Amino acid sequence: MFISVENDKAYINIINQIYTMIISGTLKSGDRLPPERELTVQLNVSRTALREALKGLEFLGIIDCKHGNGTFVSNNVKSTIIKTLSIAFKLNNGKESDILQLRYILEIECVKTAAKKATDNDILQLKNILEKLNNVSDQKEKSFFDQKFHYYLISISDNLLFNYLADSIFYLMEQFIFSIRSFYIQKDPSFDIAIFEQHNNIINAIEERNPEKAASIMHNHLQIGLQELLEIANLNSSTSTILK
Image 1 (cartoon, rainbow, N blue to C red):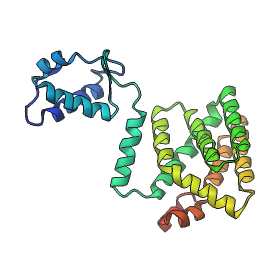
Image 2: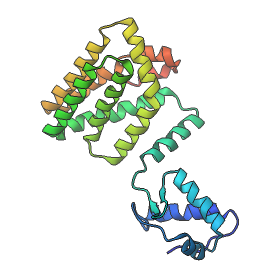
Image 3: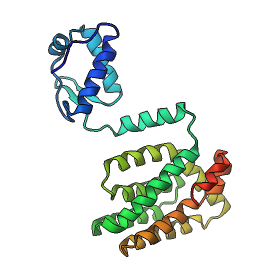
Image 4: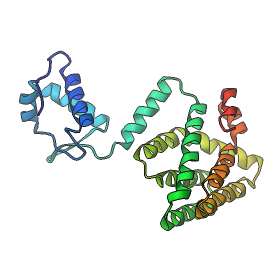
C-alpha cells in the first residue's frame, strides 16, 4: 500500500504520502496503520524518521497514536481545522472584519435554511439554549450560550463544512464577543433584554417557516454592536459596509 520514499527529509515525505492517501480516500477515518516495523519496510525509512512523521501527524490531529493498540486515522479533525485556520489567520494579519464578514454570510444563509428544514426538536433545542442564556448572569456564561445558540442554528443546515467554519469563527471571535457584551452592559443594562428578544424573534421566524423574515432579523441582530466593535477592536472603516 505504501511506497518507498526518498531519504532526504524522509519524515516530510512520509507525512505527505499519508496525507495524500487520506485525501484520495485510500485511508479513511478510523483506519489502522500498519505496525511500525512493517511501515519502515514498506517506506524504506528508519524507525526514527517514521516516528518523527507520526509525531507530526499526531500533533496536527490527523492520526491518533494509542499506546498498545496501534495508530489510527483520526475521526475528529475539528481541532486541527481550528488550529490551522487560526494560525493562517494570525500569520497573514487577518482582520476582525474578515471574521465578521464570513460570519455574516454564513449565518444569513444558515438561518434561511433553518427556517426551511428545522425539526420540532431543533426548535426546542434553540429555545432551551435561549432559556439558559437568559437565566445566567455572568457575562462569560452568557457569551458561551450566545455562541452555542448560533452554532446550533448553523448545525441545522447539516453541512459539515459549515460546522467547521463555525468552529473556527467562534474560536477567533471568542474574546471580542465578550468585549462587546461587557461594553454594552456598562453602557445600557437593558442590552441583555434586547438580545434575548432578537434571539426569540429568530426562533419565531423559524417556527413560522419564513426564511426572509428570519434573515432580516438575523441581519439586524448581527448589526448590534458593530460601531462599538469598530472602536473596541480598532477595525478598518470598511467593516461598516459588511452588514449593509
